[in-house]
Image (cartoon, rainbow, N blue to C red; front, side, top):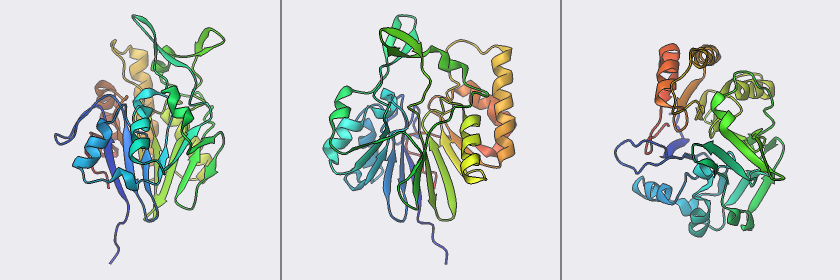
Length: 276
């Protein structure tokens, strides 16, 4: 009998399934034949409280991959390291940049805690790599088709000047197990369509499953132009045949617009959800 050996659990997300704590952030736990893996850590140690509720032993994790250099994905790294000092941590070499969000009150720091850069088990990435036959990481999504307009408020402080964040620090995890290909992206700042194009250029096919925020959430109402953009993204994603799990920074209104187009091809996620 064929036995599924992969397990994917949402440890942290903005909403809860009723069992776990929730906060603005994202963390995905994955078990494969050879790995216990984390992609992102959420914003705080609440993520590990959720893991305990779900009977997931964080001390057994062997690999942690940070999708990009923002606090809501990296805020649990230091507490994770105290619970598990031996896991390898992979982050982009630009993940430690000075990243800010432009808000009503001015520029707010949203980068990672600088103390993270002092951990001894860090591995810096600036190119596509395969860790082994199960886990690969790719970077360099430079296409700007259907780029999220909510990116415009995110800046990097360089030489005293706040410039548009290029999101060169964003990276994407590909997990191959049980005959499936799973693509995990934290927020898809570089645009989920562009990330899918890059995946296709590398693998000549699309992944079976994608887990990612789409960074479409915003406080002000969408303009018709923004609605048109979200709809065009939905139509293109539907054509891939991939099953998408999304949440965190996608936003409820954007999700409903996409869901109307993508139907069963789009599923919302919550802290505590088991995907596989």
